[in-house]
Image (cartoon, rainbow, N blue to C red; front, side, top):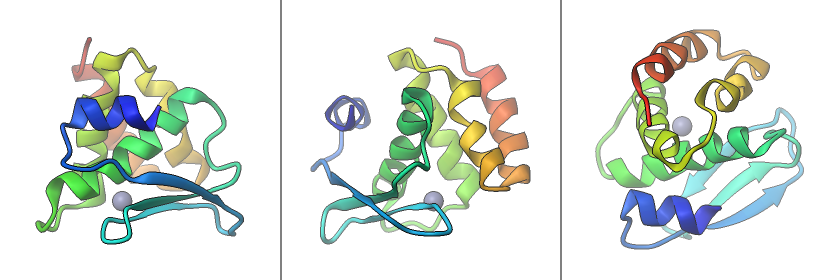
Length: 115
Ligand SMILES: [Zn+2]
């Protein structure tokens, strides 16, 4: 999945994905090491995993610019929807980690982004 997302994102390099045990559950990218870290169990299906990974690739995509988390979410949505992932299902991860405002904005973006 990460290779597919990296191709769609046209990034100069593709980070590897490392599952880690952490609480609270979260994801982050270290572009200098070239690794996305994702908590085990954070993503509960392929749509959520695609959204989380695409979000982290968004941080790489926008380097060195600082973007809001909502802007990065919007980028992630434009990346995963044409690949056939279920947007609304994918963003459910935001609700579970209690990012309700991001979830609300992402839901609007899902509605306007069609494949
Ligand atoms: Zn982020």
